[in-house]
Image 1 (cartoon, rainbow, N blue to C red):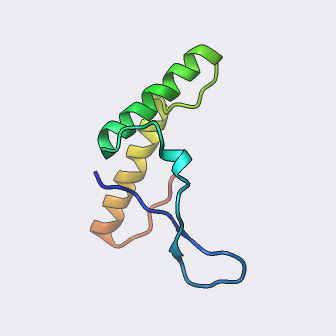
Image 2 (cartoon, rainbow, N blue to C red; image 1 turned 135 degrees about the horizontal axis):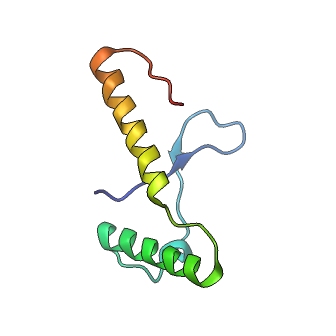
Length: 85
């Protein structure tokens, strides 16, 4: 696990450059990457339970992610493009 970074361009720029994530987006969460990720996930799950929303990842999301990972692995092994259904 590593701290993620965000890069992008503005206007007509062609070269990616680091974009600063506002401190307000990070405040109130643990500094440690793993603990912060778990805390945000639990907060999203709690929000879903309270509000009846579906913002937290679910089992189907995990299955879809594993299919993408498997396709990446097959593509790396064979050199072929793998279509996802």
